[in-house]
Length: 615
Image (cartoon, rainbow, N blue to C red):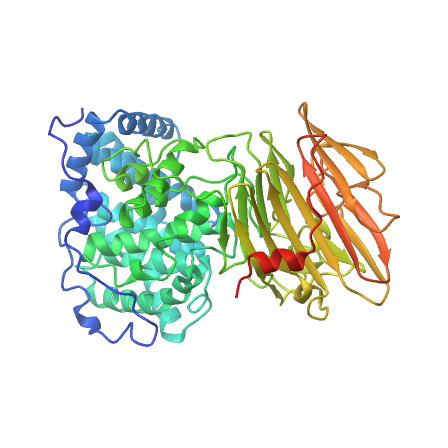
């Protein structure tokens, strides 16, 4: 039964009220404070991570009084009921196993605090003790080890009063011996992920910090060293949000890394009463916009890099909404309707359902830090046109050779697709053989291939112009660096006209023979008529017209074939142009759901750049 207490101030508001004002601490000075004092403000009682006993009591009242929260709570109860028939994870092998352990422990232990049902606590304890009993969580500290440290720390904290002294000792020893001691070596010697700017850094630091904070009063010395090391290390990945919150590893790894960075900050605030300056990291307050803008009108993401088009749930959006007074983050997350609610949705909603009305966001957004632009015809219309356009770098560990690529949604369908990641188990996928695989090369993306060659994996292709007006929006990318060509020799501009029609304009300057392939990958059925093509998908139509190109240019199509050992996509084909040029040329294609759409003005990209230059 839920409590009948009156509703109280929000959980995050209560936690935040005790925080001192902080500013971002640069790498050179972050560790200057006395590390021995880092536990001075430690909350001694359990639970202290993410929510206290008082916070859970307040949340119970809020669930009773708010219909949306009560529905979330009901569905979490159903999820826990389904877990009754499952056994704890038999052994730790990385991947989904630690995440499943975290989900089960958070669900059942959280419900124990909300209901007092000892059966829920017993199920969470079974999962926790199974994890503590593994021979090893992995070698050194990797993603799986860090996530198991998080699972064990969360379980130890939330189940502390329920565990026997012997069980506490076993879990505490597991956290120390299977994660924290190896973590100290990483911090002391700055190994592997220590100075990385990616999700690996965020996950490992967060997992170690949560594991340490859970046992901080019993193991203060190692906790101080872990927190000091994490504080220095995580500054590297914090810089990746600068200046505007974009994430160059794509939406999937934004979800993964930012989810753990939020857990890291929330754990510090709840256990120590300070964020150690993390909230003031440039771009962090805006990073929820990256999630919002990278998801199209009917819920598919602009899945560049090693991402897939189906967004995973992000409770972190509720924390970001409260932390930075950005209610649109919570509203967007609640409207996705992608999954069953999770315990952290309840906790980070802070006892308040998402508001029904928020200020309108601009329809277009440029993330300059990663050179990604997103345009849409309208908000809250699943039929609206959406374009995601990527330039930027190819160098991050999950990046593809996809400078100039785009996705296109219209009429509730995705017409121009990104194939997503290849199988991670393939030899050298994260090493020397990465650019041998079909899905990572530019030939498998909606961009250009010149002379059959890969783009330069070390290149960064900047967006040099961006405009957003009510009647149109556009961006221009300087693609020359990606193709190892002289400055100014290859540009691509993409415009959303009348909030419906998409214009793609490529300008190639050359005085030597060049073979050019222009690609658009689609799951639609394609009918060709010379310089026109009609795409049909589930009874809906999109039309393509070549507005300008060398005289011999004609649409053709080809299957998206990959070698047998790689992922296959028999339902995907490429609408493409193949040209051999020896002089400067332009390729202009119009994509529109209206067969009779008018031909737009044919302005060169220099005019686009003059209208909206970026320095």
